[in-house]
Length: 117
Image 1 (cartoon, rainbow, N blue to C red):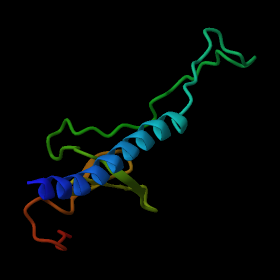
Image 2: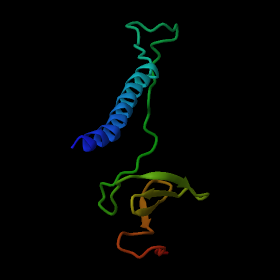
Image 3: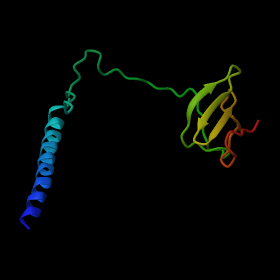
Image 4: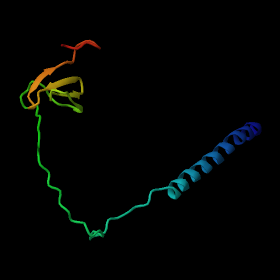
């Protein structure tokens, strides 16, 4: 029985020491290398502070018509004729220069690498 206890201690003791050292290093390195918290002052320090940015809507495309639905629109490209292409989740949508929907080149359910032209 004593030999088993010695073997267990020989195997478990280094593992416990390793875990303690690892925990110590993990805790203290996160404290040492943590990011400094910066708080904004109550009053702006810059002389130009308080400038107001007035935003104006210039163009809008909406999916209210029901012909298509935006899920994750991205990658807007404008063609030389002014028409626009928007890649959405599983769609390639085309709009004219006024923002009216023209066509969806790729629809869900079509096989890979097949577009409707």
